[in-house]
Image (cartoon, rainbow, N blue to C red):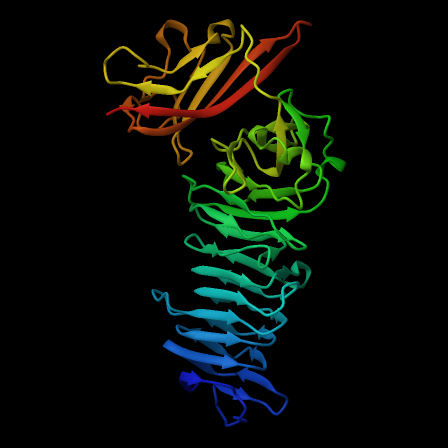
Length: 422
């Protein structure tokens, strides 16, 4: 098979039907690759007609490929391993991206003149580098073979209400990632933090629907007051069991006004199918970015949305966590003080670092000197009995409390710890 390299092609208006030609333009205004096409670094190929990579076609893009009309891949599309220069740009108005062979991209850019349904994806797009969402919404048609997978090092950048993905987006590996998902005219991302495990295969999707139709609002933990009844996210991990820190966002047009009035009480909530209950996964609110992040890894996967927690009112028998620990030897703040925890001996404390790795775990906290002093201790933790570095850590405290009717309930508190170990 003859291999042809392309340095620069502008508008392809000539007909190239020579035998063995790698790149051709038919009289039906279809740009066809039926051989080997290699786009060199710092080179440009731009087709203003429908592009077809045939079953015998091999396209290696280490330069820039501009696609201004429909795209179909029946052969091989990829880039040279070890090179990061390849960029495929979807321009023009509207596109149908189809074909039964996966397309492997180093970098990809969506920059169309239209917004809604700018790219109807019926092909399997695999992205190893960066995906730039400049303008144009990508709608995944999964029933026709459409899919979008981001590799471990891949990033989704510049997404907004003008450019995002409608449908399920997949992500493999352990690195942190923001899913560029949404619905209709709204970009509604879900973020995950870096995971300690490497064999992850995450899938996330946003739905502009009422989750409480399937998952009743009245079935919720006592600390929760309101569940978002206009939207939700789905997140799964078929590659492993380890959970991750999750970030959700709010939007003035999709999030209920009741929640927007009390952003300080926002929480990430998850439907626990085993308990048949909405559970509080905690939340650190960032008003500037309009996000809420679980301070520690969520306890499971499934359906997530926003919720409101009841305002904090401290009663005399309430458990209060003082979140500063210092080991400088002055006998002040030398361990994690938890007021009133001795009233509830059936308790469990877990401490995690910013990567979600557990560094401390114990039960019956506070008894017989059983306290967190800034060392990694307990079962199933990293580097047992080692002094931890200074920084921000996160805790989950669970304890049983009996109410006035004699009914026992589990209370979960989630927050952060500032550790000074220098």
